[in-house]
Length: 214
Image 1: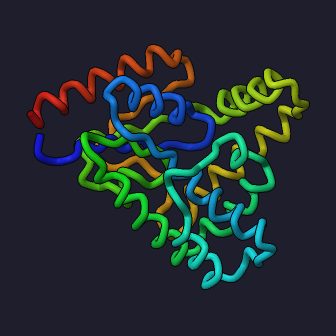
Image 2: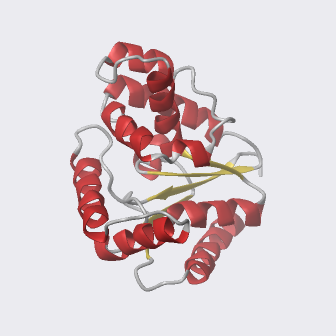
């Protein structure tokens, strides 16, 4: 293949797309980027510097300085960083800056797996494989709850469920790059599907596309 092979994976929070994306990248020896972490990294940099979260010009400048090779998931997954990220993620200038960086990343050889909210629709619309990974809000809230409890934390299921629904409304309702499946995306509903079953379903789709591209 002369061109980089791009796999675009979109879907709402806690649908399993991050785990699936990392598995796929490992399987094919591709580079992986969780694009949600790029917004969190920009938000953390603003918080660390004591800069405002409502100034689009400042946020864009910081977003252009984010290093995609240095995204520490454990640090960036903190709740307060997620809240800050959601505030700057609606800014068109911030989205443009990070989308440019994500597109540059997608060109890495021999292939890349990008997961997020707008990969198949905005970041990499030409990707030969587009997956939309979803699950019911109840299932996603339960997974998030069990993850927190499993790590020894405390959690309120009802609060998590409301948060999941709020995030869906925000992601799907925003004017700039709303969360929605790309027209030609393959839908993977993981509500009653194990990670292994989802991986095998994705693998068959990817293998077919790779054989067409050879």
